Every structure is written in structure tokens, then in C-alpha cells.
Length: 547
Ligand SMILES: [Fe+2]
Image (cartoon, rainbow, N blue to C red; front, side):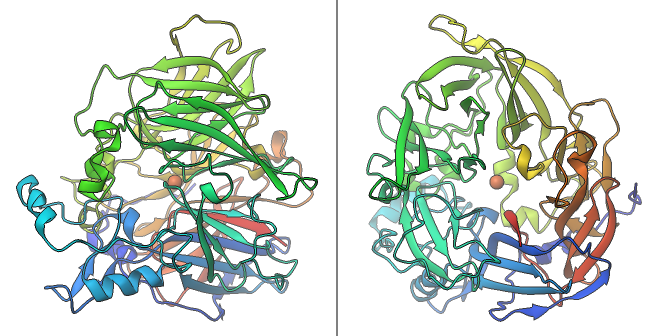
């Protein structure tokens, strides 16, 4: 197990990861050191922001600087591990149409996640209503494929688009046929899996007009056996409605797929929910505390999500769990727990005879949303440290037993300490929605003493919450989301669950360059790295598709 020195990383060391990336449209070979396992062949795709500052003569400062990490303009990356073991890298900006609009107008059109001018007062905001109208971007289906900024998660071959007109027939067998980029709104962007070029921008409503909400989770759920895809569509308004839906392939239907609305929830606050969970039997919508003020009515005025959330923490606003029958639909039961905030579900599964186990990365409140403004991320300090969520296990007991009209209390099995914090968590790809043992994530050992965004990669043994987690770290390095890739031919059971590697994009703060690091997952020890000549912008999520 590697350990950190006590030397803190200077804030500027990781700040480069929040600066514009170099575009690389043609594949280039990275310098490989160490030994990439001969079985590790395929493509690691990653998505996230790639442009944070847009030069613009229309702006008084000569540049339009995006203010929040979540608003950087999209870039998708591909690391192809070839049959010979070399690593070829390419990327593609996916919001060039939007970038050109910003360049021309000097403002960011439409609704962003963060406030584009956090210093602006309510008073001056009021007067912006009398300024020339800010350009509104076209609706995704009407605009160019790159007129949107969708850069949070990637779903290869998402059902519903298999026969879409935009998808090229040239895709090789070595890649998915297409990728679908998703975010926390209703917009989807179809990408070419080879060139990463945006092919089409659309919304969930193109799949079914009933999916007419403005908000969806960036983290959908997928059943790898049936290929079913699950998400929710939240429609704002006086009475917000969450429609939990499923898209399933159906060769005998005219469209090639069916959409089922499994449940409509209209007694929950409209909240910013970045993820939700699923088991073999149920979908569970966890409505933690990140409520939109006035049912989201202030979003058009604020033109952003962060300032439209209720900032005041309400200690009495419980987290609500809505348990929905995944197969036949309908609300089965409701649970509640003490308030918390969360970005990422780790995993969930059916347990006991009729229980559900849910693991989330939780925060005591939602102040972390404001910590993710770029100004803060580029200037981390002991006074303004970065926070990361802690793994908490909930058990919803006897879910199908009638519990009356109210909500029953969820049981908390454990909450791991801050030193074991976990963000951008992932598990064995075959074990989502199933019993599992190991979770991987980014970790920050001690928010008060280490000044980089994330110090280590961590492997949690969720079956032994008291055990010391295995970690990987190098002083001065900042890792990204770890993705576990199982060794082919192994099962996901027992000792084989961690038989594979962990892939992560890591920034070396000293050289200001990044690398793809390959770790042996059992020991969390490095076996190889593929070095880039540039920095890799801190991205959000990705997926590995084996050959
Ligand atoms: Fe996420």
C-alpha cells in the first residue's frame, strides 16, 4: 500500500486540470511504461469538460470564463488499448456549436449548472431583465449536434437509438455502434464511437412524448442481461412530477423499442438528483435534500441550477426513498431517513428475504455544490478545502409489506469515516444492482491538511466496513474516476471479484501532464502507465468497452 507524505500539494499543482485542453482529433500513441496486461484490450471512453475559457471579443474581458466545473464545455476522450498493447489517444470537443455562440455573443446562452456571475447581486440580476435579451439556444432536436453541452456520463449503445438515422453503419466490431452522452437534464447527444464526433442532439421526449420533464439523472441504470435502460423524467411546475421510466429493446415493435412509465411520483419535492439506484426487483428513487426553490420557477430568471436550489439547509426535511416495482411498475413502499445530500449512488441490491441494501456517497449538506466552482477548485487551501462524500449503507426492510400511508424509517448499517471518503464510485461492471463487495473511488485523506482536489484512489471492502481500505497514491498526483476492468474469463464471484485492473486518468502536478494509470485491483499497485504530452482536463465519468 502506498502512503502519502505530509507535504501538501500546492493549489496550482492541480489547477491545470481545470484549464482548456488541447484538441487531438487524430489518434496519437502514448508512451507506455510498465506492462499492460495482455488481456486488457479495448477502449476507455471518458467525458467531461474540455474548455473552461472561451476567447471572445464580445466580452469586456476578452474571454468568457465558465464559472462552475459542471459547465466546462464538453470533450470526449478515447484511449484505445490495441492488440499490440500500445495506447492510442484521441479526443473531440462536443460543444463547438455552443462555443461559437459564446465567442460571438460574449455570453453563455441558455441554462447552466452554476451561476455564471456568482458576484452579481439580486438587485443587478433584476435589472438584467431589461438588458438586451440573452440569446436562447435552439432546442436540441432543431439545432446542430454540437449546439449543446452534454458531458457527464456515456452510455454505449443505449436502447432507443439502435436504428436512428444519425448512426453510421461503418462502426467496427471493436467499438460500440454509438455512444450516448448524458447530463442532468433531458438532453442526449449521440456520438460516433470512432471519431467521437457529435452526430445528433435530442431529448428523451424523442423516445416518447410522455418523457417531457426538464430534469433526468446523468446516471441512468442499465440491466446488462436484458439491455433495459432506466431513468426518471422530472417535470417542474406547481406540482412537480417524477416519471420513472424504462426503455427496452423490442425487435417486434415498429420502433425497435418500448418505453414504459413505471411510476409517477407527485408528492416529492422537485430536487436535483444526479443518480438513483436499482436492484433485480426494484427501482429506488432517493429524494435527498437539494430542493428547487418554488418548484424550479426561478430557473428561467437565474438561468442556472445552483442558484435555483434552496440554499438554507432544512434539518427537518427527511430524505425520501420511493420503492418502485421494476418489472410490473407501481409504487411499492416509501421510506425516509435523516437529511443528507448525495451526488453518487455506489450500488444497491436485494437482500434478506424482502429487503433492499443501498450504498450512497453522502454529504452532511449540499454546500459541496458551491465548492465545485472553478475559482475554488483552482485555489484550494486549508481554509477552503475540498469535501468528499462518505459511504453510507441503508437497508430498507420488508419493502413489500404494507406500511400504511406514511414512510417507514430506513436502517443505517454504517457510515464510513471521512478518511475513507469515496467519490466518483464504481464497482465490478457485472455487479451493478447485485450483491457485491468492492467499491472503488477517488479519496481525499484529510480535507484539512491536503490541498489537492483528490489525493488517492481507494478500494473499499463493503463487506467489512471496519477493515482498512487499500489505497494508491503518489505525492503530487491527482487521480480521476477509477474504472474496474475484470480479467476476461473470470467470474464476478468470491475471490474473483477484484481479479482485474483499475484504470484512472491521473495528473502529475509537478510536470503538469497526465497519464492513464493501470493498477492491479487486488493489491492497488501500479502495473503500467501511458503518459500524455499534455494535461488531461478533470473529467467526470467514463466506460471501458472490451474488444
Ligand atoms: Fe456523476
